[in-house]
Length: 113
Image 1 (tube, rainbow, N blue to C red):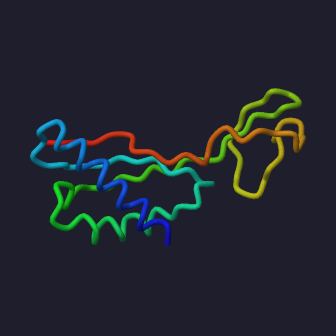
Image 2 (cartoon, helix red, strand yellow):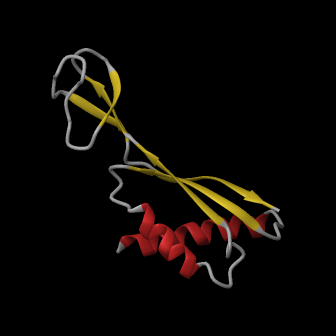
């Protein structure tokens, strides 16, 4: 249920930026959600539709881009995207890896009018 708090933050940040820049309408909010973030995009969308009512972002299209898990192998240096649950280097099969992507969550941009 932490998606509700996250969604409220999206609304607050987007609204503050819109007011700061004298925007009349926010048409689109683009966010990135990493596969390892623990956030469920469908829940964010659901809460956004409810919580954005009577705000400057009401009616904005929420575009959610899912970010894959990205690793760097500490053995061979290979950088690759992997699936959840497959935590080894696809090139050399080492488990000595560092996760370098997939846990991000941020607002990429706003489209405004």
